[in-house]
Length: 84
Image 1: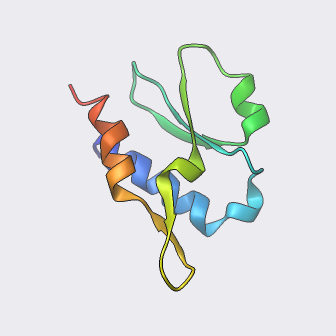
Image 2: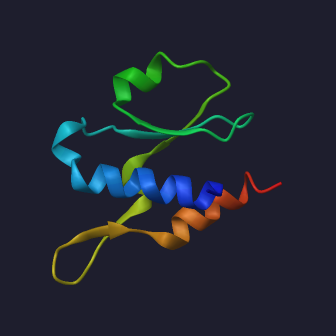
Image 3: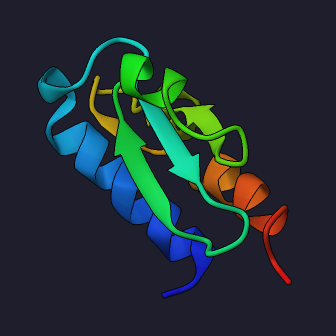
């Protein structure tokens, strides 16, 4: 799976279980391995400096009917930074 798909998967996980995460949930990306994670904000504070963290809400948008969905443009934009 490419980096775009990995981030999309974690964003979908966040949307489906948003009550499981604090308000500062983070999508994490390891630039070396391109491993993508989803952690609470406090947990992100303890990660190595080499891990890039992005607020999960940066990758979510609300539809007109009030449903949270992945923001595919935002996901593609960050994924492009890791495309080799």
